[in-house]
Length: 71
Image (cartoon, rainbow, N blue to C red; front, side, top):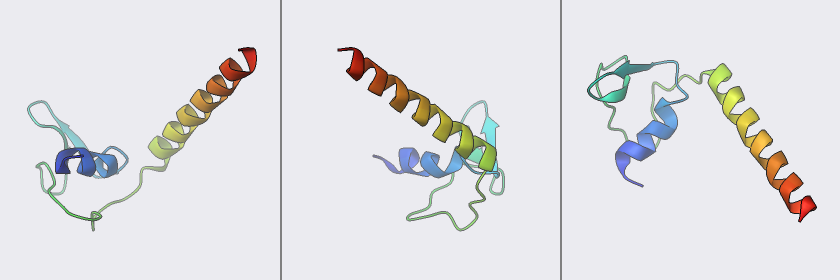
């Protein structure tokens, strides 16, 4: 995983995210693509996005279990 992929794991679920047509998801605080190592010191979780992502994962897991039971 390159650093951009890594930072996106944070940025896509952060309240500080912003979309730039040329750069994609960027940090609204720096108005640029973040370049941090480890974790972002300015990360603020977007609880709605995290809940939606977890719901999708639960739905996929349920579908996977249903498919396995039918086989």
